[in-house]
Amino acid sequence: MPNYETDTIAAIATPPGEGGVGIIRLSGSDVWRIADEIFQALDQIPVSEREHGTFAYGKVIESDGTEIDTGLALVMRAPRSYTREDVLEIQGHGGAVGMRRILRRVLDAGARMAEPGEFTKRAFLNGRIDLVQAEGILDLIRARSDRAASAAIEQMEGKLSQEFDAIYEAFLEVAANLETTLDFVEDELPDDVFSGIARLLDVTFQTLDHLLDTWDEGRLLREGARVVILGRPNAGKSTLLNALLGFDRAIVSSTAGTTRDTLEEGYVLDGIPLRITDTAGLRETDCEIEAEGVRRAEAHSKEAHLAVYLIDASQPLHEEDRARLEKLDPTKSVVVLNKVDQGKAILDVQGIEASLVNGVGVEELKRAMADALEQGADLHAPPHAVISERHRNLLIRSHKEARQAREFLNKDVEENAVLAVAHLRAALEFLGEVTGREYHEDLLDNIFSRFCIGK
Image (cartoon, rainbow, N blue to C red; front, side, top):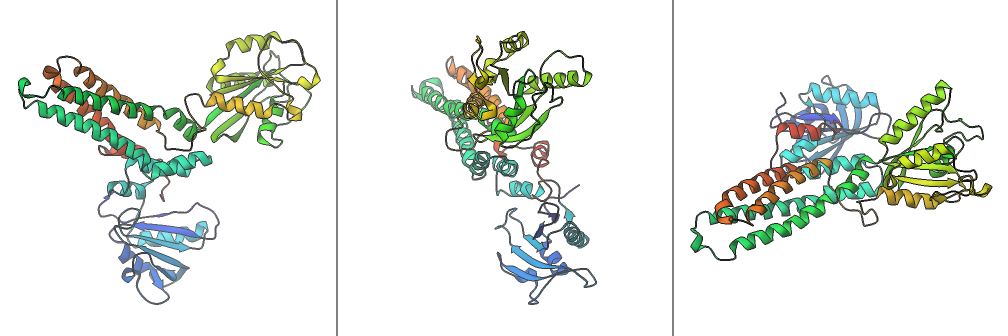
């Protein structure tokens, strides 16, 4: 079993493949012994004798003195490092073979291969960051838009943690005050003591509700949204995909049924990462290949966060279109009346009028898509840290416990103070799990296993 207190860990900290520089990172109590064994500085001063924040130029050597690579050794001494342990970074020439050779030499000298996210895990265990900040680091690494990256940086800096801590301290104060009342007889307590406790809880609930309201935005920024383009053959679905992307990704033809499989591409709309899927035209067909395409289109429609349904507005509304439109959720769909440049038939359907082949209506469609996706999230506000699914689940459970405590303050509070305190203590445990005041190994494994090995 790994020993996080005594093991010295190592890993490649840069992406695989060719590059100008590759980095091997070490952290732990045995870093300087290993450094002196494997790195020979050009000025002959051992790495172990160098000051924090300094570089040494030299070469990485095998046990027999054979040169592996030339590069730099960066010294970071505890507690002024990322992990709050002694840390060494060896910067060599980028490339898979060279990095593996240096790592193998480091491991032969006594280091252990780091587990996924173990450097960040040690930063948490040593008090450098809390769990919310650790998750912010992962969010930044995985960010797919500028807005997502800005939100992740706020989280890394502790903005979200401060809000969680404020709620925790308020609940802790209420619980402590209630426990204090248990030592007094009823006649000795001030008349407003319980009303004051209740007011503090009510104010805290407002902050908690505000945090819960950020979940929709957090889900969109972290997970993105699945958008499916639907419609009958030749309605302009592939033309729409190309218009959104700004290049010809899908084949466009006047021949109905050109698209028989799904095409998926990434796109960022108002800071929201999207996976847009172009699908086969929806119609009854005897062709097995086309029928399979229709089946896949319908499957994607069920999983999508948003459906964009295209209609050929130059033709009378087809009964298949009418039947499918009736099944769409209006809050999760946008209708486009395409080909208005070819004439407009009389339709009893509301939608965005467009001539996609000419670029008409594309910007209006983007705004409608953003509005539909942003329900429950204010993505026009400045970027700010937002809660994750893990945070949301724990906040809901904490909120429930605190609400039950609040109800006891409305009736026979002197008799029910013990029960109110018990519910508040449960609320505190759930809140503690959010930032890591309370944690267990399964929780840490779940969070840090999602990191790459060198982080």
